[in-house]
Length: 298
Image (tube, rainbow, N blue to C red):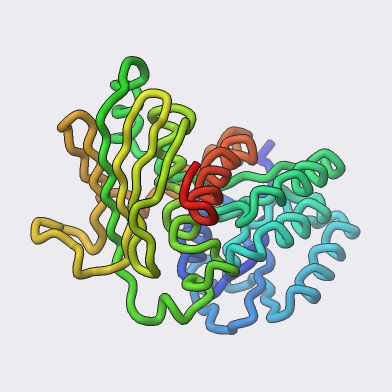
C-alpha cells in the first residue's frame, strides 16, 4: 500500500537558503502545506507547492499548525530557515506541534540553549535535525576515510565567500542576531574539521574583524590554521567559483566548492529515513565557536 507523502511546514520562506529546502522537500516526495515569513516575496513557493498556505505572522502560522494537528492532518516536519537567534524558539514551536524540526545551522547561537531544547525533545518525543551537508560530500567522505587514523596532520582551511555591503547591515552582520561571522558562516566548517580530525584540544583567534576571522586550532589528530572571510578582494586568481573553499592536509589540497550547494536533498533523504545529524552532533562545533568568538581562545 502506498503511503501518503510526508507533510512539511517552512519557517523563513523568503530567505536565501529556503529554495534549497523547498527543492529537497519536493525531491523526497514531500508536500509543503504551510509557510511563514514576515516578508511576502515568497514566489519561490510556486515552483513546486503553489497550494501551500502562507502566513506573514508566526502566531497565525502556529495556530494553523495546531489546527492541522488537532484535526489529524498535522505536519511531520517543520523546516527552519529563520535568522539564527530565532532558531531555538522555532524549534520549540515545531516540537510542540508534534513535528520533527529540520533546522539550518547553527541550531542555536548560545550553547546554553541546548539544554532547553533537549528537554522539549524528551517531552514531545520528537527530534531536532540539523543541516551539516558537508558531511555528505563524496570528496570529503573519502578524505575522512583516508585520515581516520594517525596524525597529527598539518591542516590549513581557507574559506572565502564574498558578501556585498548589505551583509554588515543585515541581521547576519549583527553578532547578537547571527552569532557573528564564525557562527553564521563558519559553523559547518568547524563541524567539518571536528568530524574529520577529532575533538578540539585548544585554539585561538589571531585576526578578527567584521569581514575576516583567522586563527589556529589543535584537534586530536590535526594542527589547523584556518581563515574565514567575506571579503571578495581575498579571492585568489585561480578561483574558478564565486567562493573559495580549500582544505589542505599534509600538502594534499582539496578545493571543495563544486557540489557544495547541491547537498540539501541528501540531508533530507537521510532525515526521512531516520538518520542524519541531531543535537549531539551539533553541540561540539557550537561550543568551540562560542568560546573563540567571545574569549578569543578555547
